[in-house]
Amino acid sequence: MPYYAEPVNEYMPLLQDDQLKPRSSKPTLRITTGSLDLPSPQTPPPELDQEYVDLLIRKIDRRLLPLMFITLALNFMEKIVLGNGSVYGLLEDINLSGSRFSTTASMFYVGYLLWEYPATIVIQALPVGLFTGLAILLWGVVVACTAFTSAYGHLLATRFITGALEAFVNPAFLYITAQWYTRDEAPRRVMVWFAGIGAGGVLGNLLSWVIGHVDMKPWRWMYAIFGSLAILWSIVIFLFLPNSVSTARYFTPAEKDFIERRIGGDSVRDIEATIDDWTLGEAVSCLLDPKTWFFTAIVFFGQVGNGSLQSMANLVLRSFGYTNLETSLVGIPFWIASLMVVLGAGSLASRYRNITTSLIAGLSLLPSVGYLIMLLGHGQPFRLIGYLLTAFAYAGVPLTLSLIAGNSRSITQKMTTTALIFIAGCIANIVGPQLYFARNAPLYHNTFIIMAVLYLCQCLTSLGLRMYLWRCNKTLDNEAEANRPNTPIIRESGVPSPVITREPVRMHEVFRYRL
Image (cartoon, rainbow, N blue to C red; front, side):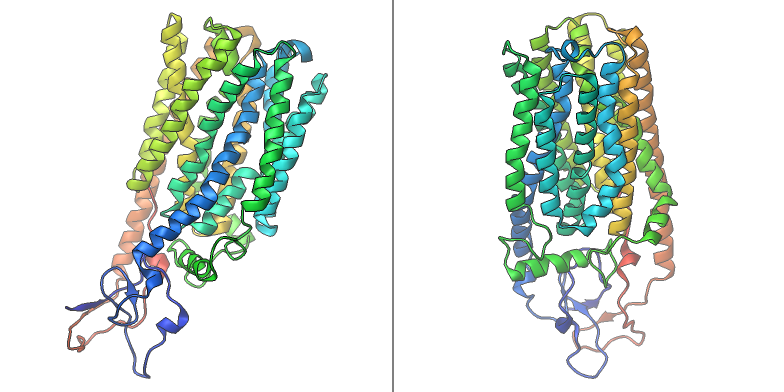
């Protein structure tokens, strides 16, 4: 059979240096026999067998994804306890009248906002597993202590501190995902661990319904129980979440070496580097990149509605005519729907690499319609359908994160963009509850109009991002065509054609943006 001289592509793992050394002083070509990059036509080393790679990836999934999924679930349970507590005596006990409740809901994201970008730098400087465990432990303590607050100022302080501590979690998990997975593998994993939000919503509402039957201050019991769960879970994170590939337990030295080399060989990174340190130049370049601001706008438009509904959902449902206990039960199908949407959208985005922006656009239209139904609909069932349609909005952020993971050329760019979108999300979550004007309660007509318009803006922005990325890929295609090396067929006799290209193509030349 003939063999072909090929440039390195994004699906080929890097080989060890001794595999790339020529066997003689004569110039040699790198030869491939199909999908494996080999120095000569021979049987591939066992470690490069696809079955070996698949088994190793599944092993990584089993070790990492459950830890991140459950952490996000616990994280979100704490976020929605304020909304659940609002119908279980919190408003009356802390005197959250007028705009006080909206301000309390926003205060969490003030702390999140102030600590978001510093967190991305700290995570790269300290052992990420230990630091994440410490953040979870401290936030669990603060949440549990919230059960003993008795004044408005105390509640604001605990909300602020909790937000600051939780600001470390999502950037840490994105950093861990970048350490262990290639850019084609990362999007699906981001969607899986982000789906923990839906699971947390289901479990949080179910527990709130159970605790709601307690006669003695149900909202205090919610905070005490959810905080205690986070404290216990931090022990698991301390024990099992690795700080890096090289220090991970339950992996052999050969497995860790191969993981580091395949991540180092991912085409999104330079051929000589693996995971780089934070650099100012890369951060400035990121700030000047239009993609960064497309991502930021998409998250902002979506999170104004998402974040505010987390805190205001029970009050909105009560305005539909549901009792306090029923508002918790009605929230369960909402979060089941969001869980299925996130996992389904993640599966599609992973299978079809260029539909992510289209998914964001399509899914953002549904909550826009949902808010219009809540605004114009009459009758409890009809308005409930509108409320459930807003669950489709929760795929927007993880889909955007998956695009960032697949389209960033360095860890610095990835973490800087991530920090910016979480900052935008924080601002959106600060603004969102303030749009539930007390004078418009309990129907919130003006609020629903604003939310419908914002989700429409998210749809249009994602389509604009798709067009921009498509144009970037066309430019890269044209550059690659102009610089394509003249690579000949090498016949079985080993006699090449007269023109031979001996330098492999750099990996950045095969980089293409995911749409």
